[in-house]
Amino acid sequence: MRDRRISTAGVERLRAHILQGIEDQSLKPGDRLPPEREMVRRFDAARSAVRRMLADLEMQGRIVRTVGRGTMIAGERDLPTVNAQTSPAELMEARLLFEPAIADLVVTHATPADFERMEECLTRGARAGSVAEFEQWDAALHQAIADATHNSFVIRMLDNINAVRDQAEWGKLKQRSLTPERRSSYQIEHKRLVEALKRRDGGEARHRLTEHLRQVRRNLLDY
Image (cartoon, rainbow, N blue to C red):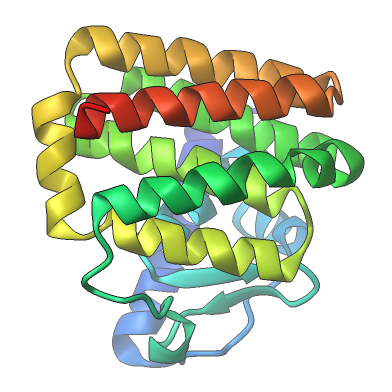
């Protein structure tokens, strides 16, 4: 069995290699990183650990992962363009219209790797030590669901949603509204949603996602 310490050291070397390349500009915006299997081989790291590390860098805006194009170094052109004045109420209204509608695409196109990523987001969210960290993995889960559609337009739409969630007003509402009880409730709702997607039950997944988003809106906005 693979020595976990070796695997961890390998993925940390890979992370350092990418970040150093960005820092010294040997890796420039638009440069494509090798496929996951090549990174696993070159740095002697577990594939699951490589995926987690890439998900972290994607959440930090360091890289961009696009279906059909691979993983690339992010640049300003890759940042979602959103109206800075989008309110939390407007965002939740749009999410309720958009996100449940993609469930059928997920159950049709999702791969085992997509479901593995969703499960990783659930696990990391459950372990989060702060509201900010929990919100990071909450957003990552919803992005993983969008990625599982394998539809570039849907993925870009969720990029825009997550960009609004990074705005200060959203963060303040989350800090005020996300009690330990609500956080536990969200974790249960997320788990049931992912279970429905893994069963390829589009109707149940739409229902679970709609009810989850309605609960988030009630908690955030009191309606």
